[in-house]
Length: 180
Ligand SMILES: Cc1cc2nc3c(=O)[nH]c(=O)nc-3n(C[C@H](O)[C@H](O)[C@H](O)COP(=O)(O)O)c2cc1C
Image (cartoon, rainbow, N blue to C red; front, side):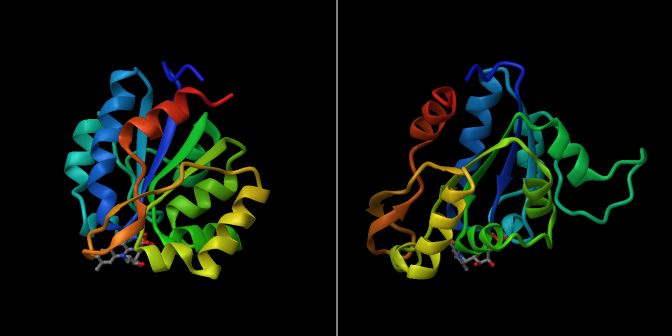
């Protein structure tokens, strides 16, 4: 997929790998994509909205119930304009919510309301990733047609070595470029 001029909605979740979304945003912007970022409830505990806004060169979205200068129902306008929705990093929590069809925040509402392709890039502790609940949720999302850039083996923030490390920025970007 040519990313130039594509509207990419980038969901950033509340996990330790959230800082790596900075580099994903920079790469997408350098490929001339229009990147609009949606932060989940806990994302701001790991990264700053100001940095995301500056790197994406766009307003950031971090809640559904905001008063704005212009009338806008954010999750509908984001859902409609999206050519692609990418969730990076995707926490176990957000994966579970998406698998259940929950719609209790801006990111999950946007995904539900959109017909765009969805790419999920999980990152979490190995046991969280390997847990049957998470694996079943991933299976469910795959059955909906969501694509995954699976995590790698490596040293995790908790100090353990195992699967769950966010795929490299390069792996994520080339996956997006090679999307049919
Ligand atoms: C230091 C720290 C690191 C965390 N890292 C991860 C992580 O990498 N992946 C994950 O799924 N959850 C992680 N969590 C747990 C999530 O923050 C928690 O499930 C949270 O509710 C997810 O928020 P979200 O729904 O906004 O993504 C971490 C928690 C802490 C305190």
